[in-house]
Amino acid sequence: MRPKKAPGGSTTVDLLDYLFGPGERDEHTDPHLVAGWDPDLPCAARSPERITRADLALLLDAPVEALRGVRPAEHVWHVSVRSHPDDPVLFDDRWAQVAAAMVHAAGIAEHGDEHACRWIAVRHATDHIHILATLARQDGRHPRLRGDILAMHTAARAFEAG
Image (cartoon, rainbow, N blue to C red; front, side, top):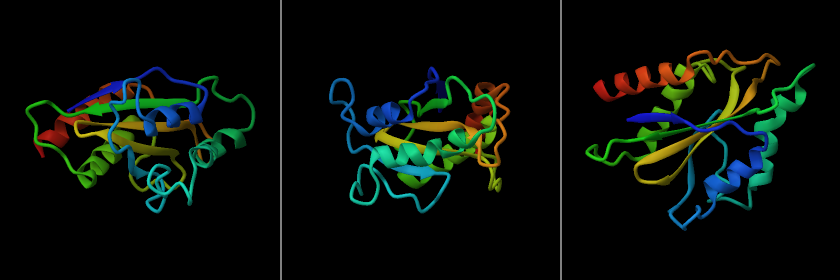
């Protein structure tokens, strides 16, 4: 399993459009939510009558908009986590566990932290997920992300071993 940090961004809805869309060459199959900061969050792809991508972007961005003072120029954090080609195909519940372990390790949303950053994990292929988070905690503070990718690599190795 390999986490790979993607460039940050400033527009949540644009990344959501990519993650839930067909991809650049129609390679995305069945894009859907596998996990998020709210376990009851509806999927914008499977339940568009309940929540649109634009609505989801507003929910993800709400803590950023509520920040006092300086907001991060690029508030969208994006990581993909890919399984090794020799690994068995993981089901959504297992990918959800991987996503929770990654955001915990990165400092985005530690287990049990009700004021953590908002995040989602989207799966649109059998071998990987994408994690999107907005870089503002719900208590108005900025997350501490020093060493996030190294911590995620350590978590990935531990996840594979266990």
